[in-house]
Length: 164
Image 1: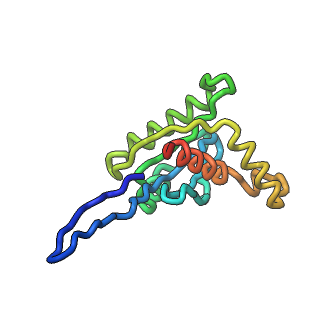
Image 2: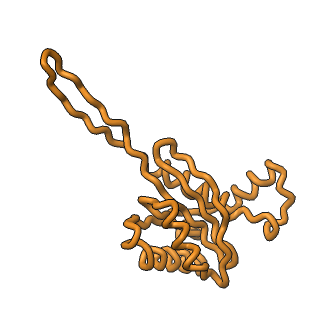
């Protein structure tokens, strides 16, 4: 976080003015073949909130709906989770997630002026399932998807990583 310092002189005093830090807004996507989770957050608190996931057909979302969501939230950064293998190599799903992120950026990056980032999302779906179970989730992930909770974890991890 950066602060804007300025020294201003008045008739008899010198004031030090400090501008508060500017919150960076971000939207995260947890890519999936049938559902794509979404979360929105800001850097000031490093917190994120899950949004309604987008249905996908073989990883392809409704692009008009995706544009509407980005247009409503106007993020400065779009973060796409990469489901890397435990040995840091890319899986077929992580290649498709990267392709999805690049398509989001190609279609909407210039239009909305956001920066695209990728974030290692290993085990976020597992963690989201654990959190959901603790909150009483019955395990029917088709009926009650957790994709956006995974996107929330991805975004909060990204905020932590980018602030250090």
